[in-house]
Image (cartoon, rainbow, N blue to C red; front, side, top):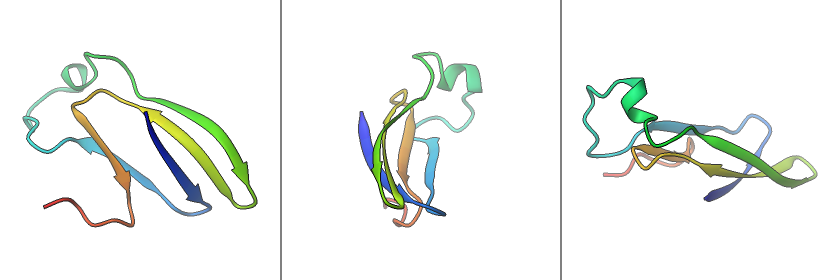
Length: 68
């Protein structure tokens, strides 16, 4: 599980992971299960969430540059 904290108007990106065949269908991407997002708590304007997703998907904060 990936755990992230986000504030209002901050985003996360969920996309095919590096090295995954770009021609995979949605059914193939999700063959190992769905994305599950669990809200773990919050303080003030920040919320903490846990994200479980198939390994074919990459999850990252939108404000970070894409991996090279």
